[in-house]
Length: 352
Image 1: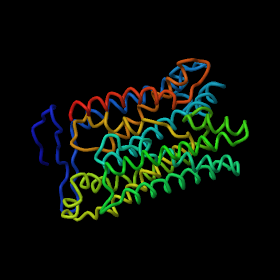
Image 2: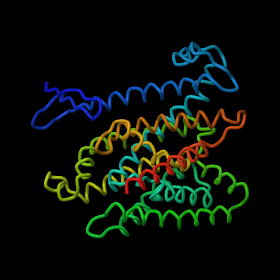
Image 3: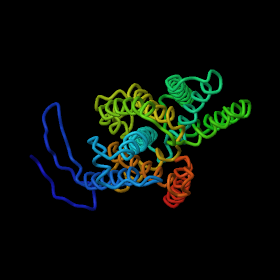
Image 4: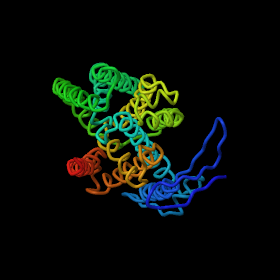
């Protein structure tokens, strides 16, 4: 085992295992950041399970997981609240990881799926299915995935010029997003009142009323895609050094970038299909995690954990701020994200 002196002012790595085919390194500062994030997310989850119109004690929450909670408490915890809490954690992690992928690809803190327009494209696909054929959950999910992929393909092709460069990808993505947003508004205005109201509420990004039937398939997709993404995280980090350096290290730049693009869109679309386009989590989570870990580039696991914590905390606030009315979680994330975006732009302006 090789070890290095621990300096908490910069990222410190401990080499755990090194062979010709495998090199596992633990970033001490990342661990020191990830552990509190996990504990914070679990604390928010427990508070969400225990509090509300029907109060449940902590022992009853624990008993509910073993099936021993008394009467209504079992139903409230396991059937009503747990799907929403798990969805907030899993979807937040998916958005954090998706934002990390696109910010790494573009090498720009503004490179997230909600800024580039992939969220909007997934919403367009789902909206078309909802308002034209009134599709089932699986059809809406398929529409969101197809919409996100087609939007990503359009942005990628329009930005491609001897490679898809980051700044050009962001600018074209913002333009595509604006056009799709206008089209989405037109679709809602043309729809019948009841369908338009449902679509508009869903478009705000909401976990209200989510059930196991909706949460379980989306969570399964997110977990599978996340594992695939972690499998190519090393190639993603190599790409941050530039295409020439990546090729010198044996990474094919454009195929790898295209694969990452598809994985990032799949994560975003899986969330959008169930909860609608939840804004700003994908933008803020990777950068907040990066500043806490002080890493040179985007690291996906801290970004995912930060996303899970942010969305779970935002959803708890959405439920409790104006109780008994439950706000869409997207309303809270937009408020938080707007403040973060102003700070980010001001910070970047000071650097330049």
